[in-house]
Image 1 (cartoon, rainbow, N blue to C red):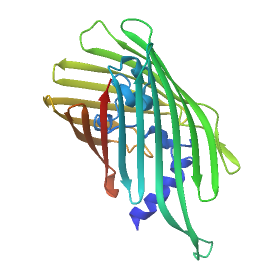
Image 2 (tube, rainbow, N blue to C red; image 1 turned 120 degrees about the vertical axis):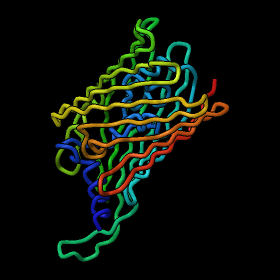
Image 3 (cartoon, one colour; image 1 turned 180 degrees about the vertical axis):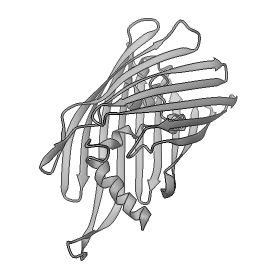
Image 4 (cartoon, rainbow, N blue to C red; image 1 turned 90 degrees about the vertical axis):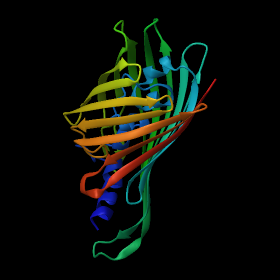
Length: 296
């Protein structure tokens, strides 16, 4: 019963006002399993299709074109999927992505608990991003997203913009990143509008050795007045196997607070398989899998 109630709240308030009066908090679920396993510390690390969800400036550092499909099982009947694609251009790179949060149909009840039928709920964000180098070490990026949200017969639609900067410093192995995400008008659902989850994200990535990577992000959630800190580490045990661990402190709503995240990645012949597990307290665990490929 507890899990079912949580699933209902997850969708109802994920679409509207789950985290301190903001709408569409599913936009903070990110994309691939790699960065989820690093505690979502992606401001200075995200490249290729992952850059769409974390920092569009990462597209400027893409080494090749890529595509990836992510599937996350969150709680009972609630799932999240992200399909991303990045294409290198003569000047910069283009990113396309679709994020979808959905709930299997649920029973509707009236004022006297009578059965009124079944209903569903879903949220979708369609992204178009572009990143380009502005110098030998730094790049800028923009991401435009169109957002739709639906609960039963009610729906809402809106748009938002992300902007980011990323730099590979003169310190060997150190990169910096900054992004402002979800800048746009309120999402009007039924008769009232709620602000989008406006976030200012800054972080760094540091490669200590050839096979050890550290990541750190600080997110300021403007409308909630909340600061979230993310830490992550990645160890490449072999050329084809990476082990990951991360920690997030201060999150709420769809990105659970104060939890350790773990994961691993496998690479072979241009394909990659990434997996991450995220605890949801007493509710259980969320599992995220990404299948991707790189090509020229």
